[in-house]
Image (cartoon, rainbow, N blue to C red; front, side, top):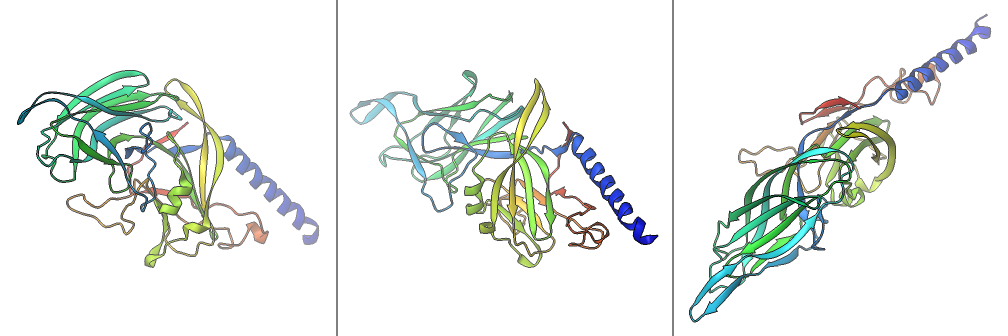
Length: 346
């Protein structure tokens, strides 16, 4: 009798399990939408405003803040502001509210005989509409290359397809050299918002993956090479990013302010993973992967840290349901850590 009933019982159990999984897939998926701050860089093409960084060894770009004044013997007078340029983001993939908190500018004067005594004007545009202008005085005299931070304080409610822009103007007594588009010389806007939607991470056997969508998609193949995203473990373990790849994920319908928006996720997957106590550390620039803290805030922490628990079958890491290969029940799931998250259901 056992031989007669063993197969039907196992078959029924598997059918029931598949039905449960299919039913779970049919539900609206949970996702996490953390509020984080990203630097939107003034890119070398003098047009693009993006969180994408170059590789660490790539050189910076340079732009000029031109001084406009009347030159008289021994004196300069009647200075006027001049436009440096306009940098615009790509259209947003989904709705979000952003706060453009501050702007960083690396700059140095070009004329050793004069002090800059300069001002910057930051015009912020939402699509084609100017929504704010902020005038800030330079803190240094221009003799040395410095990074200065200026308050902007502008909030924009974006819907899918919207852009935002920085139009930068300079006024001073000497031309200045602006350094930008480099990991070190990170001239740009510091923008706080829920830029990333996290659909989760999974650690199964020797494979680990993370799935997410971005308001402004970045080049994650470049970011893997630059080690702006790392898979870390205990005892100093670091997964090989050369054994990681990016792929298109699933399509999700998200309920936004003005209706439903369809987004397609991105998956980053590492293979041949051998570490323990794994976590994914994700950013758009270099960060302290050792997780050190600093009292003065000078140590850069990743914008997202995802702590992982390994998926286990009923018979262990590699065992299947009732010993049948290819069927594993997920008993533990990834847990978001290191940041405060808003949990939503679309």
